[in-house]
Image (cartoon, rainbow, N blue to C red; front, side, top):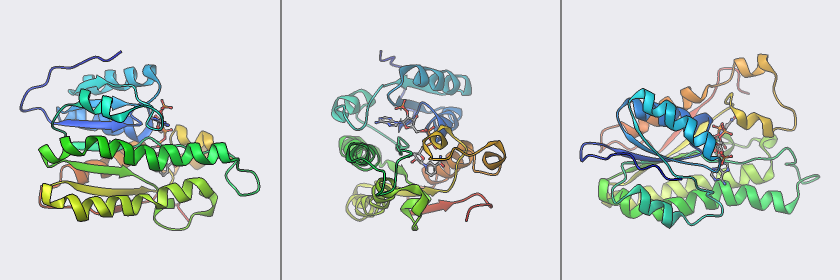
Length: 243
Ligand SMILES: NC(=O)c1ccc[n+]([C@@H]2O[C@H](COP(=O)([O-])OP(=O)(O)OC[C@H]3O[C@@H](n4cnc5c(N)ncnc54)[C@H](OP(=O)(O)O)[C@@H]3O)[C@@H](O)[C@H]2O)c1
């Protein structure tokens, strides 16, 4: 079900993937608190509904737009988003406990690349006309594994996230003339549902010293709310405990 919220000329619009939890949800709520219209995409409708409730309570104007970034047509979704897009936040991501050459299966490898790399590129491609119209910003939620070697992150995850750096650089090289900027956001460990995909799920003590989704949302907002002439090419943030 698509619930269309009222939009005024004064309302800025952000389209957020992975909006049903973690960083995507925290970013949606933070932008909601600034009064933005936030278009929420992910696969689980119930999770999007909860984010919408939180964003609305914060003062935002949420629109629930279920989307599988690896499988659905992003152009159809982009039509719902509208002709002007101020920010695109790509937080949808996937990993799997089987992540070494010794145990990874090709179906899982392909699903991770489909989500983390192709899912990002497909949504950007669909959103670019609306981003150009609003001199919008793209925040690609990558990973510290996309910034430096991180063997524990896995073969497919590391390969897919590392590939996001040139995705961001080429946007900045080729789309700057249209006012479009992009940020490669590389967080270290975050206490989110994502940890359930690790071979060994961290306990409460380990989670307590990690970044929170809100910490990462704050970094996304730093890039999004920077003046139009300021481009944050890359942001790396880690919990103090990260090795
Ligand atoms: N947690 C960490 O330690 C960590 C560290 C560095 C980077 N990251 C990155 O941060 C981003 C956000 O992760 P998180 O920590 O906030 O974990 P999270 O709460 O698990 O969020 C991931 C989101 O991606 C969505 N998603 C997965 N596959 C999708 C698909 N095919 N189409 C649409 N949505 C999809 C999930 O929702 P549905 O299942 O409903 O689709 C989920 O809401 C990810 O890109 C992750 O790689 C995480």
